[in-house]
Image 1 (tube, rainbow, N blue to C red):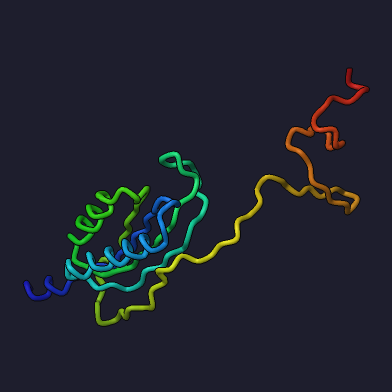
Image 2 (image 1 turned 30 degrees about the vertical axis):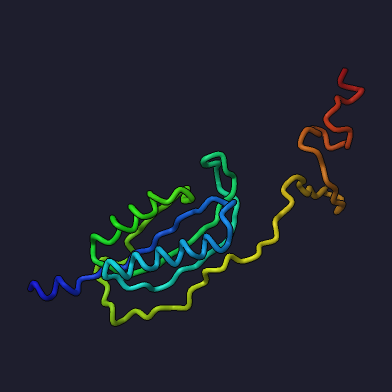
Length: 161
């Protein structure tokens, strides 16, 4: 029974967010370091995906954006403690979350996939203006302060005085 527990692995995924001002080379080096942590702890690396710089749902550490990294790996139940400790030490990591995907994974069934460590180039959206569609099939941009939609920037109507 002791030999069976030696091969007992779990499938984990960790998502962590780096500060947006981290250089791409430094981010790639850190991602490779985290891959090395998994291998050093006796785990099996499956895939790392650098999703690039994206807007956060809420502000964190006075930052509104971050570089999102997704890492899937296999390991013994104690591997997460070392992985999370390494993330906690790094100053550029803003957030981190690890989830168990499979509590009884067979390592022979998993193959490592190609990593995506270079951050993708993402075209930023212009979120300053919204588009509103009228009933008469005409569309126009409007100011959020324009309550009546008459284009006067929120000034009251003459008949409402």
